[in-house]
Length: 328
Image (cartoon, rainbow, N blue to C red; front, side, top):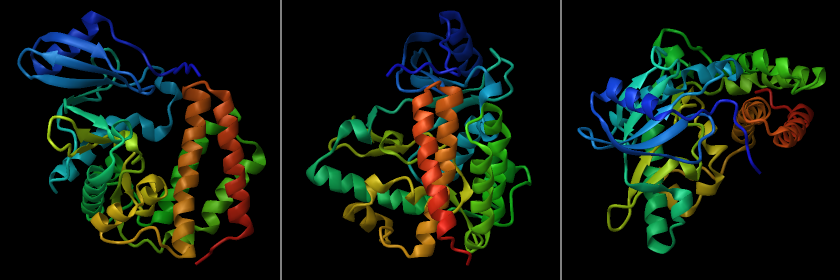
């Protein structure tokens, strides 16, 4: 299926060279457009003085994006800084700007890592076991990073955020509905039920007493494996632009593909085994993520059938959680 993103826009040659010159004070010797992104527009760039880098240009038509998406590159930079303090492998940010003074777009430049993502490498045997084990160790290290308040990283850094996870989730829902309702993604019953699910489960969410640094999008495409070493090693955790201070279960609701014996040994706890309350906390995180994705498909990427499929899945989750709520 061909996807027509309303946010993606390629740079002209002059624009790309201007960004590199402004940000890194060097010249471009070669570049190429990288595939795969629909929110940002991404380039591999070879420079005269800074070596190989990756340039990501933020979206156009920003009136279409969700509230938290206005601060994705800022979030990503903060996330990387926190992880690098713990020696967790992440991208090295060389430049980042959100003032939109250049081309009226955010941009970020990171050091290029010779690598492929975990999905493309498809490791087997001992290499697979070693990579899963190391990934588990690094996720555990990431989950040791704590904060007193819950919320989006830039908000908390500026003195905002929430005292409880339940209040944070309810606020995320309201922020989401502030834009989703403009596009008739949900009917009135869906909206009422979505709010009700998070109100009913607020006491359960509030059993999470300390905010943890969570990536929230740790699929195989966001894990880089270095290809310039023998054997290949874990290169970096990337694209944490939706990261936040939240419930650790936000990560475990989305990485079922990684929950194998070797990951568990590296992580130090068998996260495949959880009680009913923990499972419901995962479901609350997964529901929120599904809401975001449904909006993305309908409004940002113009794939109506994916939105309809997401809406059907959300309706099923709402019915299940309302029929069997967990209130404490």
